[in-house]
Image (cartoon, rainbow, N blue to C red):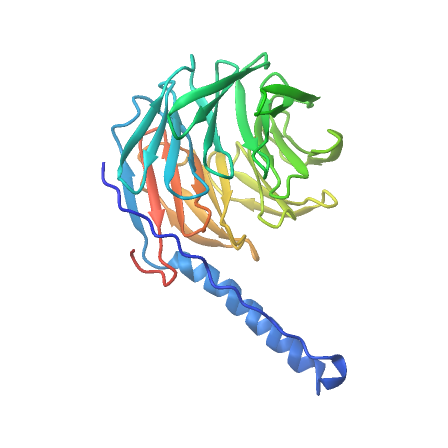
Length: 350
């Protein structure tokens, strides 16, 4: 296993000051300048990923295909879940395996961290979710209630609530402090993917019935039913500003939806095979897609164009996840490896 420590550096923020209208000699000059700065911003975000990348490979850890991978919010560890029924926690600073978490009786479909990076949740084909203490590597509790395999999980911004989606056509909302099931929402099909909006107000699901749904976290009511995919939806992801939902289907399409009114913003023919995962960078300027076609693609959010094509896995890619600073992302594959891709703010190798 070859790992290199990752340095987390925040992207610069541009601040705009606007003069009073009466002080402006010509409005067209302001408009042109604003457009120029906006274009420069977009190009700068894209150029970060057009530079040289460094990639580390973690291999030999899992005995079967890896189906899920996530960075902890503090960037210190990476968690992976596999068909070998284990969850592994990798310490990125020490460059070693920190924990192997055992207890599930079937494959691991999804992992998620609380925002404070202290608790890890894992979902499984055994119909359960387990909560793990990352200080000790010990199990806190098991959440049981689904009647079929649990496909996906996500935490609320405060880390108190966990949402889970299952092939049993339900969404379940849990209080992780007590393990209490707070609400069950019935979806219109088996839930293949779930996501919570960064502001904690919406839940998104992707279903095997070719539909993405947006739900109110507060009331559990359906906000928008997003129709347009011709095949099952395997992944959903919110943009950091909560305004866009991305959904990916098993014929390689990605659709971008307006979360406020449910309208379709853009359809992208992203891959030759199913889209298995989508992840947004922290600034929302870039999103990544992973596919069974063994290719990772990075996309410009503003114009929907490809920024980068990456192909380094030997089998289908099952998961992709950006780190919180957006300058690193991890991919997992059926080839039983994890790859950590990283870039410096200047686009050079770290």
